[in-house]
Amino acid sequence: AEITATATHALARFDLDLAGLTVSDVKVDGAAARHQAQGEELVITPAAAIAKGAQFKVTVAYGGTPKEINDPILGRYGWIRTTDGVFIACQPSGAHTWFPSNDHPSDKATFTFDLTVPKGSTAVANGDQTNSTDGGAHTTWQVKEPMATYLATVDVGKFNVKKGTTPGGVPILVAVDPSVDTASVEEVYARTAEITDALAKTFGPYPFSSTGAIVDNADVGFALETQTRPVFGSFGAEPTILAHELAHQWYGDSVSVSKWQDIWLNEGFATLAEWTWGERIGGPTVQQQYDMRYRQSGNKELWDVPPGNPGRMQMFGRSVYDRGAMTLIALRQKVGEQKFNEILRTWARDHRGGNVTTGQFIALANRISGMDLDAFFRAWLYDKGRPNT
Image 1 (cartoon, rainbow, N blue to C red):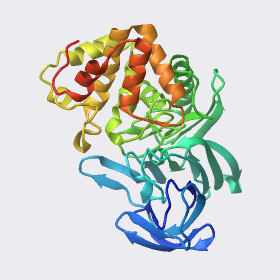
Image 2 (image 1 turned 120 degrees about the vertical axis):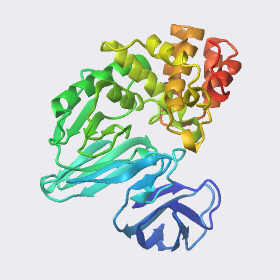
Image 3 (image 1 turned 60 degrees about the vertical axis):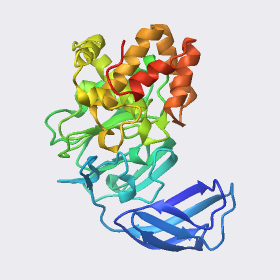
């Protein structure tokens, strides 16, 4: 792994996140550096201190067999083996099980993946495929826009692949394992193109160089918004879930949280898109989704967990998703459709490629609406109990 970084302050030593793998050599700017594994940290001491503001390159030679994470709270994630390869979904912190990094969404980077896989297998990663040789056994993929480490993926196996351009002009690549009987590559391709273009009309221009999806024969019960190319387990890419993961390309991937406490900024926006797409294809309306949940006054999972600070135990709980989306619906009711859409589009435009906090979103909503919404957001995001509408 080669990492180019900038020192935000003077460094006599620094850490990278890396777990379960063996490091054989580390160089900093071409000079041998001392290194030591300490838990899930790789502690590096360069031959010469690095000055504040200096750019430097770290080269880490390492190897081993990555293992998936099975966390009693956060579940199963990371490097997940399949019958014919691997499925990688790293939220929130699985990236450092397969490459050294600062494995936190606040530190984004551009990426190049140089991949060699067994002949007969296909590798699909984030971004754009820039090179393919040896019958596809050796490929290079480039991520041109900043990406959080947990959004990196390399999926290897047997895939049907379809490439093209959406009607709206976005390059698209979809890969579907032929053994998955819940979706065909043609179906997923058509849905991905349609949803990408539709969301761009609501949220603003698509923020990346390509869109797509990967459906693998992984025995997992989740999908993940891996940048440019969300991954789905063998359950398939049902349209509303596809809309959820593609909405994340704007909210979560391009505009990323600075800290996991603010994950509602990812999941609330994507859940609203999921409900909106469901209404579009004949399911319950967005208002019905809201009303059904609001009537559940005794739902402790919803009303006792503040989505703006859910804690590790409830990081992926229903409050973050459903109450997060309800917060946005209630905001739309309060400020009106026009101001609400302006807030969404401005948020995506002004913070494209960057990191954000809930405080910044509240400030934007206050500015665009011309209202003082602090008490509204406090009730919806931070207080226990069902807010008054």
